[in-house]
Image (cartoon, rainbow, N blue to C red):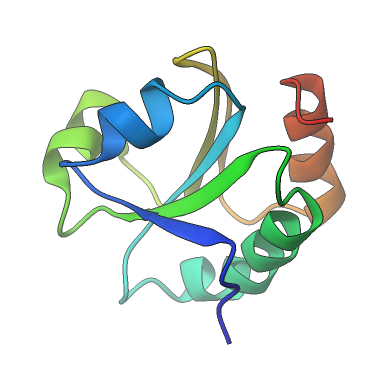
Length: 111
């Protein structure tokens, strides 16, 4: 079951929700058909719950939101990009451990 703390990012809301955020933002670029993306889902949910109120955590479906996916050169999924101050500061491709992603969010200012 997906966490209520995981936001849905789209081409339409990306600028406001991610680039305009005063908090660090973790964006999970994924697709419904991607098995590794589904495997990463519980990790993303846990980070969203742990950092609730300190950072934004969300998912962007690359099939439905090609504009943002192309802009950030998403060529493999899952890809996770952490944004701070409206700029990408860290990028991960493939499955990652929770502590690795959470530590990167803390480095980006999620406190």
